[in-house]
Image (cartoon, rainbow over all chains, first blue to last red; front, side):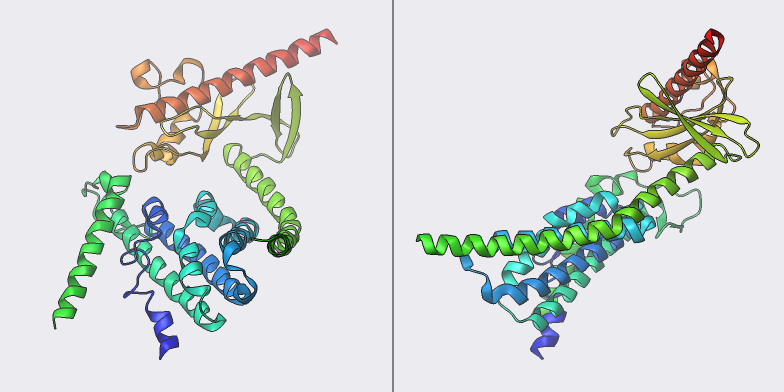
Length: 199
Length: 187
């Protein structure tokens, strides 16, 4: 039951972006289209799962006083590895995401989960937490991307949805659109969570 | 914190750094040749898109610049593939310009840009960049500047930047050919 919880809590109840409100910077920057959001989500999730596993493994030998530099070394190593592998074997994806890959290193979800979860829990729990949080992040950033792309460009995942007369609201794919969408999503989620509590 | 602890921490950090460095070095060595190959391939493809008959590229160094002279399969000289990076609205716009011996643009390709999504990014759409094919001299300017290139609505800065980049590339290639001719006549 608790293992299941480790996995599920990241998706809605403790969604990193909408509830914990960490990792907002990449969420805002890379969610101008659904594809970009999805790619960023997957890449960050991969790093998150890997770093969670390794940190849970070495936590017994990690002295409290130097845990942060150790986390950072582990995370940045995985980010750089992802960068090389993607560049070599997934050039199409790299062309889309190349500039965002180094940004994964500053995604606070990863350091946040290392500190708040992986450092205190076992390997299995930490892996599941990584997957759950990664999924929650990917879900939100893709949804935001889809909304912004739909209204701001009239397409979804690159496919044209509206007829040509549709005038896209350009503001939605510019930075302000990211703030507007993320704010509305947070409001919706909290509204439904409060309603569920009342019952 | 006593000395003993200090050494212990240093040792642990060193161990972890060494492991990380080892892993990185291994993957770097594995992926580097593949990445290099991809880059060469991408450049070949780019040259192919501005000179469809391209079969061979010779690099000639003149002055400080590298000139990529493109030949077709019968060793006929097609022109020069020239890179340009004019400053647009959101930083440099990298373009590859195909210029013939006569200083005519064969085609251009936008390689990399950071313009405003939905406005300046339209410079990378065929509707805009295909206008450059076959143009030369004074035609290489926006219509509102007396040329023959239709600017993108609400993205004049980006359109003007691309046009200026193409113009400069053409000028450079013309100078290059002038230099080559001068060299030949000296011989």
